[in-house]
Amino acid sequence: MVTPLSGSEKLRFREVFTSNYGDLPYLLDIKVDKHLFRAMVQFWNPAYSCFTFGEWAAARIQQKGDGKCIPWASLRDLILIHPDVKRKVDALVLSIYGLVTFPKAMGYIDEAVADFFDRLGKQNTPVPAILAETFRFLNACRRAGEGRFIGCAQLLLVWFHSHFWKVDKVPYRLFFKDYSPLKEAAATPMRDVITEERWIEILQNLREEDVMWKAPWMTPSEILYRCGSFDWVPIPGIWGVVGYTPLLVLRQYKAEQFIPATQGLAESDFSYKGDHYKKKMRV
Image (tube, rainbow, N blue to C red; front, side):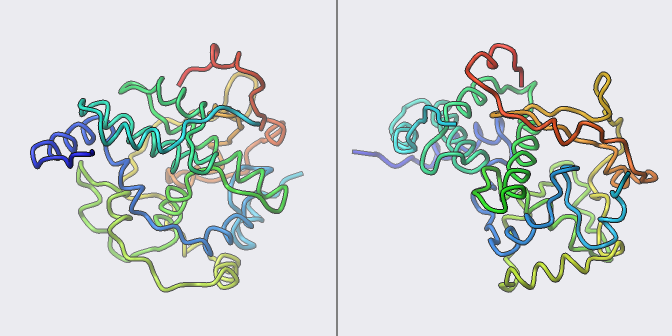
């Protein structure tokens, strides 16, 4: 028999979750607009690992396995009956990573996700892996013309709405220390249903002035734009590596945009082979 959490236990559970994992649970409340998502994928450019919306965007960048899995039901039972609140929280977060952030196997948490989660800590960040797998599976879907996106659709759509729905005045709350784009996205009602065809028309006709190039909460910082002899940066993911060119988004840092060198970028996307990579990879 499963006993519901008491009021004090719920409060303790929430405190542990927020302290260790921040805004992650808001992903569960963000609705995915399937029509917008399918339309967006058609504008992904695998050669540059970026979106090219409309003619103006295209013109700016023109230039001369199977694995072991953990059933969700097993983690669900652990969340419900384990007496240790920290273990309950960890099991729930692992479930979010495996079912929402890296949803490779429907209803299961891939072994590679569990291994990745085990190596996470306060000094590490999952951001590079999330970016890498988002880029890799957008590349795969675009090249094949079909396929299931194995990435966090919620995060991708939050990014889209933060840049492509301009407002005349920026709310002051965006500059608060505890401001959360995920929390705001989860609380924002979905707009009227728009068909995939209509979204494609909207994206094809985007103008430069329609885009909010720099998120209001972003602060200027140094940019890692190359690695060794490469004119791009390799980003390690859970199932593979993909190259990315940060110089393609200089405008987001209010710098002058130019066409960067991307030689070898298209060939930088590859999957890991075997289990030996785990010994070499670090989060």
